[in-house]
Length: 400
Ligand code: ARG
Image (cartoon, rainbow, N blue to C red; front, side, top):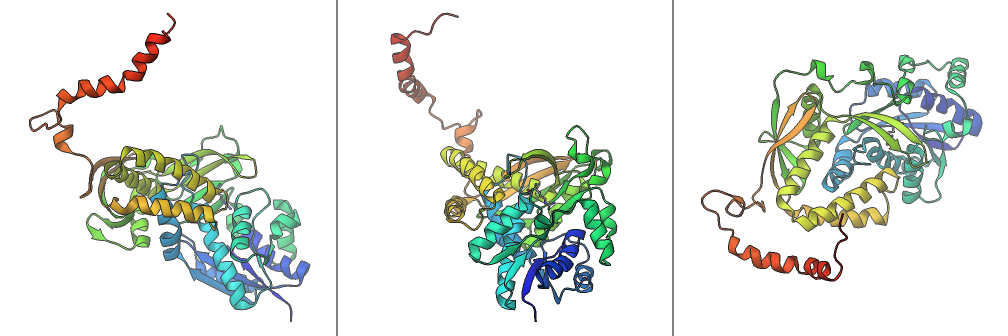
């Protein structure tokens, strides 16, 4: 009997070829593991395909709930967006896949885990580092990184090994999908001057086709976690899915990002992340209402760190745990409702309320009922301006 390896299996060409290749090159029996993080096509067909390709076992794990609960919502609470543009859908899915690879390898007594990443991207780093964090010493095989085949050579290998070439191979793009977003790369998109063609998008309508009337929705949050839509309490997966559908209809969530990969490459990445864009906007709008100025300023720095470490494959680290503890603490009053208007690709925040709002009408108003003591301002300004006056007297600004 051969040793076993657990392969993260997507059903695509590379991981299908990998099943044969792992047997041929390493004499390993492959257990295919497909992780459902949402919006995945026909999972049963993928499972059957793995077996057809020679896998000794094919597992499909529905992980949508843990993906949302343990990865997406903590990142939402952190306001984590890479380089201010990318809501990290793929980056958040990889540590979960690594976790399931490790768990399955233990359960099945496999000697190694494997994945289909190439040697040029971020995903190899995320999977390798996450596996190492959870099971130091467990062998990791990345066939596509080792075999060094071009796309044509991979197709030729597939043909000579009776591996059906999926029609999707005809698609000019490399796609990765989860509930939090869809990444589209390759083909004509590799020229940053090219406008992404219509067929790159699947989840979001182009502006020419969006409805002529806006849609409004009210998102309820409890301690930074979205829990309801228009007053209806929903579980995380359903809530994200509903916002996804609605925002997509209005063309919200397209991102065209010149992105800095960890491996040093600048790449052009196109995303559709309708739910992520709406929820991140709404969450921050509620924070604007309930967090103090200093909290907001410092939290924005933490958000950038959190996004970077997530992007860079450092999810399962002490650093993330520590930042997560800070983020968690900031969320204790992030409870309330945000009203969002979706129209022609825009997601506008048009209302927000919270029992913990720091917005005080009687302080802010210019109308009757103003309680702000304007007579205290000159004294405040006198002290505030003191160092400026002192310096100006000793070191006069040179004339223009
Ligand atoms: N550039 C994004 C990231 O690094 C998306 C990667 C998409 N992955 C893929 N295998 N197509 O997270």
